[in-house]
Length: 131
Image 1 (cartoon, rainbow, N blue to C red):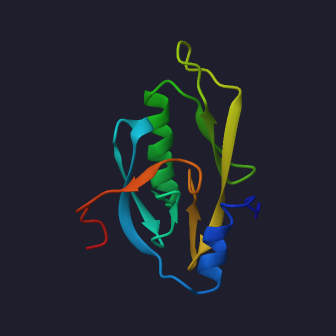
Image 2 (tube, rainbow, N blue to C red):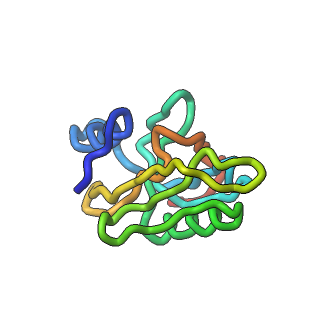
């Protein structure tokens, strides 16, 4: 498993120490036109923003939403990680910067911390997920 650099590693530390329970909920990201994605959370916040983790299937939906914005994103099977372009040029949508979010095992499930502790995710109100 690839280890996140700080501060993203704090989600794993929190889970490993058994300090918080993970729960299902839904998240919004303004960069994806406020689309809702089902994910998991410990309730941790980063600068006031949610720090979600996602299943492989939901991560694929985030990739699709990235493509709808004409941005680059992919799943790297060798690394078992999702890679997203960031800081796209306004006129071309191209970027030379990428962020990688590898798989992690949390409570026996493989999840991906896409944008956790980096992007401005919000937990969706009244999502009905996990209810």
